[in-house]
Amino acid sequence: MTYTLKYFLLTIVLVTGIFISSAQEKEKKGLFAGFPEELTLSGYVDTYIAYDNDKGNPLRQFSSIAPYRDEFRINLAMIALRYSSKIIRGNIGIQFGDVPKLNWPQEPNEYLQFIQEANIGVSPGKNSWIDGGFFITHIGGEGLIPKYNFFTSLSLCTYYEPFYQSGIKYSYTGKKFYTSVMILNGYNVLADNNKNKSFGLQIGYKPNDKVDFTFNNITGNEMPSGEEGKTRIYNNLVIKIYPAKKIDIIICGDFCLQDKSAIDDSTSPGSMFSGFVSLKFKPSNKISLMLRGEFFQDKDAVMSPVYPVTGETSTGMKTYGVSAGAEYNPTANSYFRLEGRYLSADKNQQIFYDSKNTRSEVILSGGIEF
Image 1 (tube, rainbow, N blue to C red):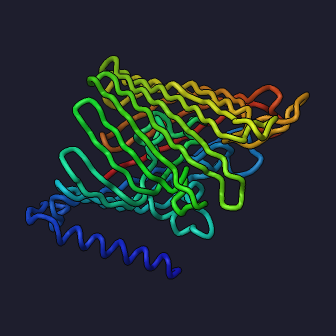
Image 2 (cartoon, helix red, strand yellow; image 1 turned 180 degrees about the vertical axis):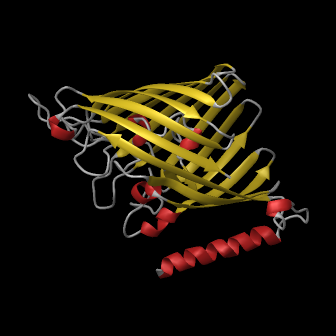
Image 3 (cartoon, rainbow, N blue to C red; image 1 turned 120 degrees about the vertical axis):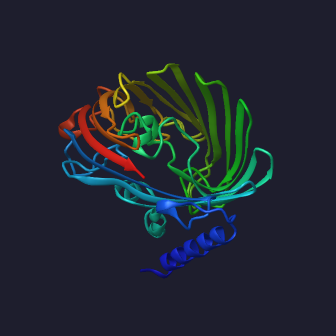
């Protein structure tokens, strides 16, 4: 065990002790006897087996979740300790599995793969919080934990969004409006990759229980130290609609603009836009049926790799997709899910196995929260 990891684990123990010692005297009973009322402990385990016909290597392209082919694997195993009182709160989330292994920082900061969240906050006034540390990203219409998404696979729109962020934020939640303003190390970084900071913003409006609008943004220079600076403005709009008791709809759209990034003119800005629409129909309390359509258009390769194209010099990814699935919930805190997905790149982009521009995949997954 490295010195850094030992130091990190010791810090968790000390912070946990502070939370417990500062809690009110009222305690829980039963399984969590001895825990202060302000302190909660939770866990989550998610497993899967996946197949696709893009079989160039065991790692599946564009798959942040369920990334390995033809193996029974652990997507995510996590345990979270959360403290919440009227004036102070904190979160510590420890994780393991394929999701953090492949999507969290690599060497020399690979120890950060074990940290899902680690932050502490103070309330300066009613409905307001100032929090600092490591957080799950505020960007996107699909989240990290598969149980809370319609699908286990992530759309390409979500695939290129950040998973996590580090910094400090101020947030306010009102009856219908909510907002957050953030200073971040950068786009999908925990340990900073340059000397600059990024600005984050979230503005939400929930007029009633039928609809929820959220606009998210990250703006900053995301180029690593030593490379020419390029300001990226990443915008994300999420609309959640609940038109009937048995129907949920998510509409998500992203637009990214980055200066000095046009693929045919390095002095001009490049752009990317993507999105998806997901629908979930619940014919019963235990059964759900899902459908998703998606697109990803990144002609300037702002977010995606550069691909050679027949008759042209090069281009970024241009892809469409459709997914369908069914879910069974034996209990409220568990699920089993079977889903299929078809991706189709531009006809001249032969980016999949055997020089094909299409891919089909199937994922069987299950998870439980406790």
